[in-house]
Length: 279
Length: 333
Image 1 (cartoon, one colour):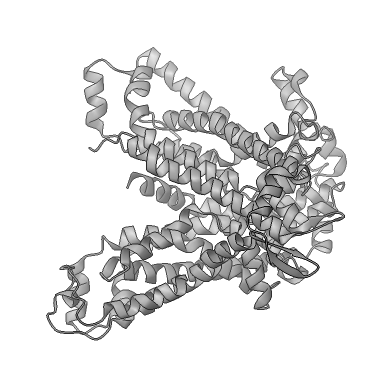
Image 2 (cartoon, rainbow over the protein chains, first blue to last red):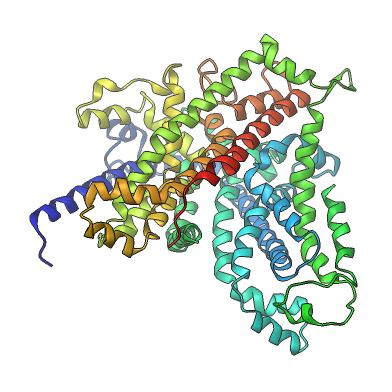
């Protein structure tokens, strides 16, 4: 397509600005990953150069894998995240179904009651949460984290899923009821499959703060066998401040899973954000 | 309180309570039905977990702030903890410092994050732009990383030991600007606020981008017919239309900033150095509750600080919802 020179100029300016910010956004991460594969002399000598065959070194990774139990931390994080997401989706979808499908006394009140949690951060109840966990003997267990994150994620999940459940056709549900399906089967077999895209959005949204959280692992489950990868990285790096190879490798190890997941799901995530906002 | 709420709801579906909802067949049936237990079953798990771990602890925290314990004896002291926090120099100095720093932290976000976010969104929404998906993905990437990663990564990059930041600045001729930003009392908080902005810029950008996309073409075409194009079109047509989204972003930023903790803790430690210059309410709460160095933790003063944080957030959110959001002009297409 032929464009007037002034338009082409404007386009170039737009790309320059966007490209410039792209550098700002990704350069720090690239620097960390790149330097984690270099030996100590080149980390300091030529920080901006990618590793070459002369400067390539895995010494940092060897230290990290020998010292910290990163595999176990990773498993803990997986358990906590997958467990919480499962409960958030199950309980959230059930509550959203009840609130949108039936009219009963207290419906609106319960909706508002749950919405409170969207605005008030759960961290403010930490003092009380720790007390409850200490009483029930759940301190230093992954169960404690799963329960807290479920409570944290539920309000938003109910809110988003309700919006989508309203769009499921009543005719479909009623046809199921006429065929003799119970309310539970209507929910499980007819409604849940139809709101699957919304569930994926909720899952991705809830996942980020859970995987990345430092506060609750630090307070509720700081023991060695329950450390999540975020807390593990924090403690590990705190011990190895002066060993730059180890620090850079530990950082890269905790960046990688997130980057891979992001590369796989970024389209879905971004569509979820934009769809939610347009609504 | 909330748990019993759930139980009192269940009998509410009992006979005689004819629902007015005409949408579903069960509701239309003119027979007296048994109690609709399935509603209770659907609601119970969510309400139980949510009430037990969110609402009850929150009220427990509010309650604890009215008590104090001395030698294992807990006694009711009314609002004494609050007077101590605001008035006793040993506490008030730390508290007002943290509150002021937190406000500053929030101001930097508003002044830097929102304008850049709006700018990037506006650039991204230029029609027929190539590479849009790539830019979006790149801008949002830092938001996915944890504060632990972001905090340490920037600590390394800004470290005078490594020398990455000075060499980048030298490349664009600004080397004289470099200083040990995270180590100086005057610059540490600004530097950390900007790191936080760097991480979270994706959220305002994405929300405002979505709002810009949802402006109908007719509105833009009408503006073009009236000769409103380019920058004037942005300022006079598009910006007013996305104001509600900017409001939403601001309130999200506020809530996020006033319970921030991780970034400061990771990069400056629980003492929020140098000399408490980066101490915000989250780190202040953590130190008070758990203690640090030789000072013992104090759950009651911790609860008091958490209560104050709760009230600040509640006040600002209600003000936004009741006053600002209602006055904001919305356009329906």
